[in-house]
Image (tube, rainbow, N blue to C red; front, top):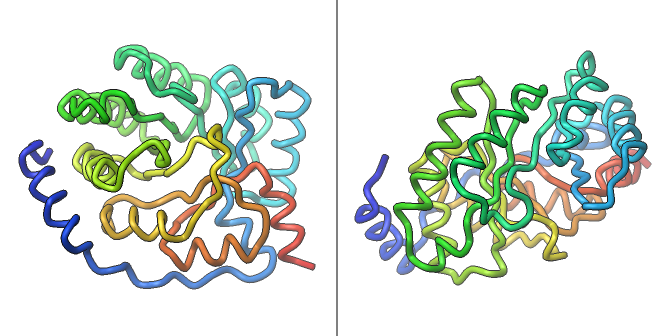
Length: 248
């Protein structure tokens, strides 16, 4: 892993000038948009029937993944076992302030219940308090556990709580710890997904860490714009509607 000193040195450099932008991806056409969409259902009031409906929609539309809270991972994994639609489990949602050991345990439990991806919220307070070593070690610990199970991990920020410099540092910490994806919003802040934040994360993360666009995303045009900005996946609770609109 990069040292904190190296990460802060890179942050200083990127505050002056960001790395070059990645090559633009080709936006999907029609129903192919489903291959870019991860449908999430993370509201605290989400019911068993809603999770079943989500899995039915994911199977019918061949959505790239579904993301649910840990209590529904076993159910969703069973429903999608033969559908080639992986289940992502939200860990430490929505605050990210759990103890690192609990994040590891939660991730392991979700993986044992059938999750193929883990989506963990970064500890915002530790980051803003400049406890960078703590944040790096936490991400690394969970990432190693997830990768040992041949699963992938997303680290989620709450970008609107972070300064520009803090966002750069967060992204570089995720990169140093070996995360697979970085995502700007949990969805609980009701932020709208923006192309500029995706572009920023994509530039800093480089080819090693992919970017998931998140926040309020309601239509195919938003999806295409976010992909053009560098998003490798679109996370939305409106995924089915977006797909239906794209094929009309």
